[in-house]
Length: 91
Image 1 (cartoon, helix red, strand yellow):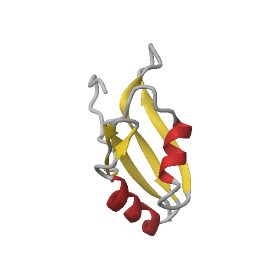
Image 2 (image 1 turned 90 degrees about the vertical axis):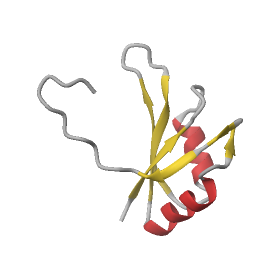
Image 3 (image 1 turned 120 degrees about the vertical axis):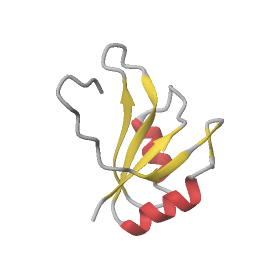
């Protein structure tokens, strides 16, 4: 079963492809998504990586969390489910 990871402290220039290439050393990457501002398209400095299985996800957290990636120390952890937004709340 696929396992989603949160990846923080990214340089604004990092692309989905950069994440895929970097995380593939831990296992099979199903998808990557660098989160961007809607109006500018600029990265928010974090994203998500979906690994194919639990083993690859655990290896990614164990080996890549705190590792230097393009001059920044990555923050890698298991992604939490999205919060429910209340009426009128901004995201």
